[in-house]
Length: 151
Image 1 (cartoon, rainbow, N blue to C red):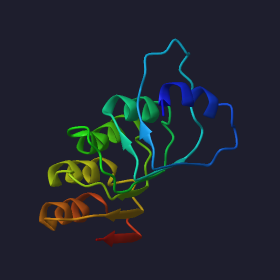
Image 2: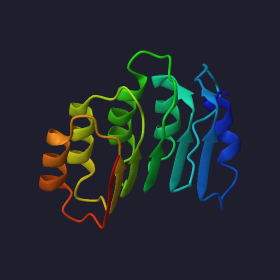
Image 3: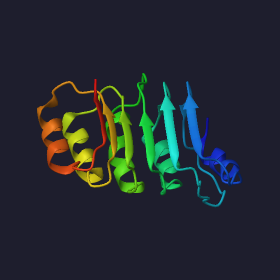
């Protein structure tokens, strides 16, 4: 599924509040289509694979995201899951509700993401394999959390 061609179509839906991809393979293809912005404040990816360029195209068009859920997938693109959090920080600074269920994401990347979004975070749900650095980042930077789930 090409996010490059999908984004202009989605941008014509002004009342779209929640965008969910399930069992998709997101890719980016070169396009002459003008960049459009999506108004949706929420994005969820369930068992959806993506390339870094595809996720960058999507996130760049969704700067007002406040709710993001990146659930488990079987991504075959090297480091794409890890890089997705860096892209999220770069393109979507308003995230307040964050779920990180992706496999193969480094604890350093998770900690950096929590540090970046920390002052805004009110809900955080994450997988945690070696939680010490993650817990320290939460304690230090996510002081406004109201809902914390660690799996």
